[in-house]
Amino acid sequence: MKNPLIPLLFVAAAILGLVLYLANQQGTLAMMQLTVGWMLTLLIGVAGLTILWQIWIGKIDMSHLFSEGADGQASFSRFQFFIFTFVIAMCLFLVVIGDGKEPKFTEIPSSVLMLLGISSGSYLVAKGIAEKDETGKGSDDPNGVAPNPEAALKIVRDEAATQLAALGAEKPDEDASTKRLRMTLKKIQTASGAVG
Amino acid sequence: MNQTALSSFMMIETKVFLWGTFGLLIWQIFIGKIKLRGLLRDKERGLPMSPARVQALASTLGVALYLLTQTAAPTSETKGAQADSKRSMPSIPDEALLLIGGSQMLYLTMKAGATAGRLV
Image (tube, rainbow over all chains, first blue to last red; front, side, top):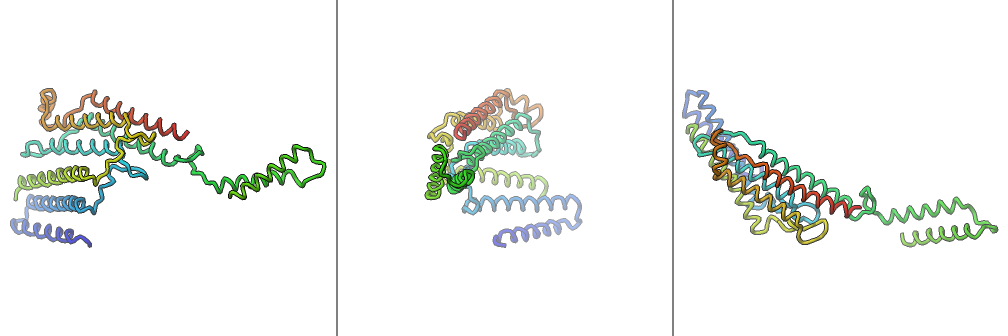
């Protein structure tokens, strides 16, 4: 384990559990509940502190929190999704703790859920549009396939060769239009070969 | 080490985590570590500023601030509703929901329109 804090945490939680147990040698259910409660609270607390610490030292990289796409520019949809999620989480927490005497979970109004739905829906749609944009960027193909000049020239060359083969061998009594077509196809074949 | 001490500790712990995260994010945005470059830029058309994004940002911040202020210090209108159910999250008026929905819709329509125009 790379982080020495994690084994330390388990040791601390075990010691605390032992201390609490010894404090009440009767081992009643209430005492057990309290012990488990403290252990879990400490565990979650240390996990939270570890996350904050790692953000602080830069091990958890938050620099691209709002960025999207290859250019790494900030995305508005991500930003608004984050704002609403964070604000609603903060409000819920403030309401739950209330005056601090008796924390109690509360009902969340449907309008708040609707707001969260609008925000996340908007994010998903924007992401879909951005993905489509990235796929189709720089392509003339309606299916969004990236162009390949080499492949295109090969298609032209092969097509010219097929047409020439269909015309058959050159005959002395050929009409003017067939001669012109044969010449054009040969030129195309040569040019596409030279460019390719 | 009774139940009250445990719940107080939990509250402190959650406060530290939430405010710590909030502070860290604000700090990283302030020093430029979290990049906000291009937030209002019209990427589809390549313009430096997009009106659709600006109005969407304004309505987002407006509704978010409304929700925060209503939770921190409820007005007389919402106070009654909150007193009924002891303690509850403030409800958001339909007008505010319509505002944010319309604003997001406008932003997405502009974005989709610009993208489609470029792809066709």
